[in-house]
Image (tube, rainbow, N blue to C red; front, side, top):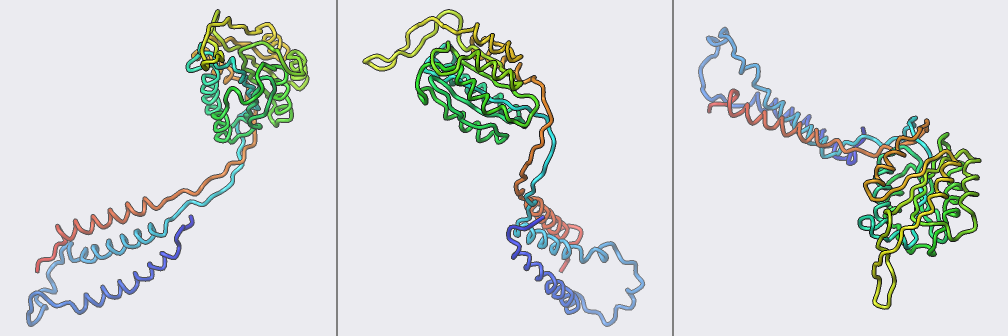
Length: 327
């Protein structure tokens, strides 16, 4: 244990003169009743109050000590610790093309996906998780990390329009593979979420799937979109308006990617279904990881303040009840 304000501990040196003053005061105190001799009372039995007459002073001294220690702010020290735990390497590849603004999810597809993904990340405390976004091109939003606070903050900033529009599924998958292939865990998983068909990029989705299979990476693909039609944003001279368009997801390609890598394809038609899919993926195989944790300082002055308060209360109670002095 360390102290944030150790200089205040010098106040403890005042306890010694306080005790000396109390002892001298006992010898010099004047009697309430003066008699010629006390010999007739020497053989009388002493009551319990005689033996407890110094308790109140002792309580005040102990309360003062506790208060001084509290003012010095005792803390538990910082420390690094290594521990083994269960975890896997995961990269989430999220489609942010403008079609992800469709309103068949509340409030739209991309915000629903971000919300469910954030819940998924929060439930995987020790996994190495990264984030890749893609549209007409792909970009690593967050490399794999166990610092999930950083990942979640970056996930909040993801918006449609950050990248060139269109949908490059193959490029998004290839970027995710490049990020995860050298990860430390035995189990490596990519979660690819899209709502369209591959119409851009330099790498075919099936080619990227074969590369993932070579590195032993499982890819779970999720097609996002309702059955039939959905309200899509359309730019007009009067601003953005929403019009119904058919939902077109290349489920055949997404299934092939999942099958080639030992993963699984899911179709999410609403936010509830998307949540169930992430819950299913949450049951993946786990492996041992060595995690270094940093323990922050912890303030422990409150128990000392409470101790001082309790001692002062006991002192006041005793002085006004069973140990009360009668003038």
